Image 1 (cartoon, one colour):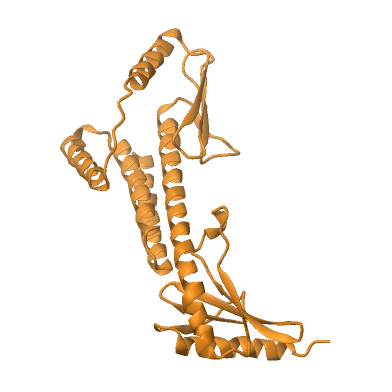
Image 2 (cartoon, rainbow, N blue to C red):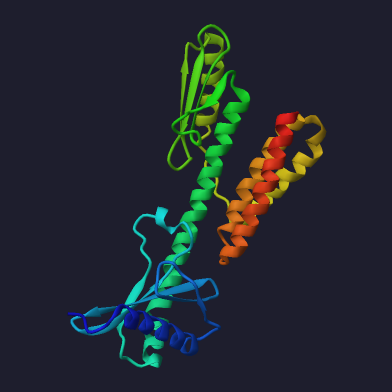
Length: 277
């Protein structure tokens, strides 16, 4: 038989949440949560508290929530500690500050990095599939994997092609069927030149930004010679890539959501304008 009622355990969680708001460093405040009996938050970190009974003793679990989307990152779980409910508030706060908050900061950073890589991967996959759709005759997205696979049927005779982007968006499989010999020779020559250049270059972050600036400058000088629909599509794609890279570096969920919302609205307008041209 339980020594504590559900209401008593719930009140224990609430009392400990209020005590942590007082004793933890920073402006912690109570928040509403559907997943815990009590929650508190400060500067992008949210703690969920639940009280339970174990061998006749009340205990409180305190779990630090990870950034939205953490579930797609393998090997990651929200950090959590449990404490005896009868411990002093200052001692519990010290435990949270020493054990839970540093673990949360470390794992949240790993989640942000993984989500940034995934956003870049998705943007790269979108770039190549959109390029295929814009360039190949009769191109359509794959019904089962529209974000990473496309195919086309058109051109001379029974020519067809299909493209599937790899998991990391660093490579892709391109299958050509019934390809005219002249076209095939051109493809082989192009691949030979590209793959024969084995010199690999590495760039620092500053050099990467410099290269991007040079590319923008080059685009500005050639803007009148580029078809407007292509310019609009490429602009939309780059807005999408850059906005996702930036948003995944922000600590504030509200800030990330605002950046992504505005970027998505701009991308939608750019793509709509491209279709009308």
